[in-house]
Amino acid sequence: MSDEYNERVLALYAITVAIAYGAAGVLQILSGVGLVQISYVGSDMIAGLMVLVVALVFSAGVKPLLASNREGIAFFVVGSVLASILFILQVLIVGTNLIGWVLRFEDWLSWSVLNDLTPSIWLYPIASIALVGERTGKLTITSLGPDSSEVTE
Image (cartoon, rainbow, N blue to C red):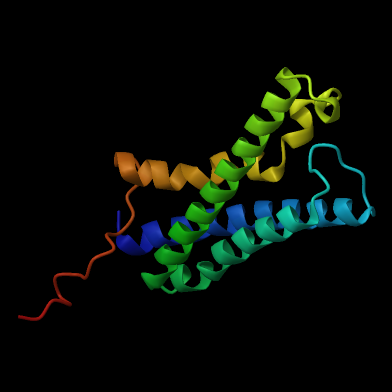
């Protein structure tokens, strides 16, 4: 497969992830404002803004990838890293809330794990697939180093 084909596939994947994160971020913000009530999105406006930032980073890499510019790969990787950070933070929040529930603290008596399943958790698998595929060799993305034609001696 050619490098151009791989970059176009990655661009399609990046725009798909950007749309998913963007839609979830907008819904989370609207839920935080009180305009919609969706239980599986959460109502944290700041978290919604962070999810929108991830969507913007993914979408910023689409144009360079379609132009066969390697800079687009960096946007994709940074978007995946940001999605990973949000995922880890949300897992930590779930863990601390679980500890409060297990210890039967008053504020956590009515807590449920479903309260903390936000887009940061349920969107993470689609944001991490390409990085895992690239690391295992199942997804071929052009190397980040210079081409042999670009190296001057």
